[in-house]
Length: 381
Image (cartoon, rainbow, N blue to C red; front, side, top):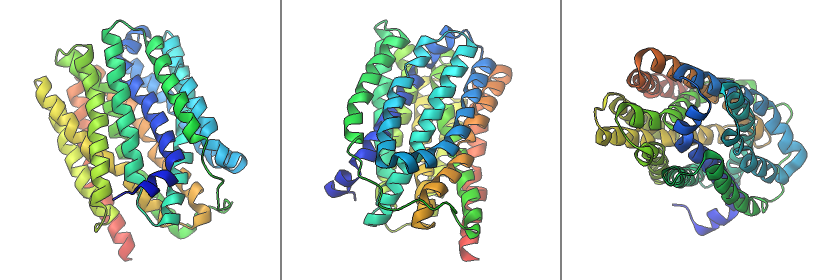
């Protein structure tokens, strides 16, 4: 289990995880009203989120270089930028404005994501303690709280800008903790991961891609599924992303305990199976109760996939190449933010959100059926 010393050593990175959770949790709960504000149909909204994914490409190039130049200050610089940038979805109108706003938000978010995961992976290696699931659990708790607060704010008549401003203030307060990050102990390796590790990066990155795709689908579309298809109100719709955040926190804290005595690959296979079942239940639910149960199973299962992939990669590369390896895996993984919105939007527009979540269920099932066995086989070779 994680100790107080572990939490203290990783406090700056943990606060950065919370900053990202607050931003995306608030946004997820506000999706229905932001979608109306931007006057976007399902396909157009999915396309706007797809355009936002372009920011991830720039972030993959920027993150290792920003960390190299700013050292321990990189995490707090991008945490502050994250807190401020999430005001933009509340300010814009029109699909183009939303796409541009989310392009900026996505680029900053992913840059911070790579920096903080690389930082945490280095702390894991130095302390020889598993911390990744706990850190991602902190993200999920912050995400769930922000989603609930945003839903209550909507119910009280608050505008997206008012709600995002309040959440941004909370994020800025956490930046004081992020600022306590210590200088990096290991210099970056310009050569990056060795050629022998290329297979690992591609396979682990593909697992992350499917995990991120499932997360994004639930973050961006669960409230719409609950409100539009199943008749939920604003707070009931906000329960979709809130349940995702809470159950992801439970799953990650459970994964923190489960990893003791088990391999990352075994945990990933079990978790992905649960996530696929949950996505299928959410897809075919005819009432709110079953949909909530489906999103809960999806949250518990998908919660473990991405942190396990990060941890698996970080333990199998050289110390000096870790930041670049995390960035490379993230390049592949964050492609889920390209594929997910496009697929979800197109399927929802033509066949409904039930078909969209069925697609997620099938996609996530590929992890235990294809990618985990491939990683096992590579380890034995």
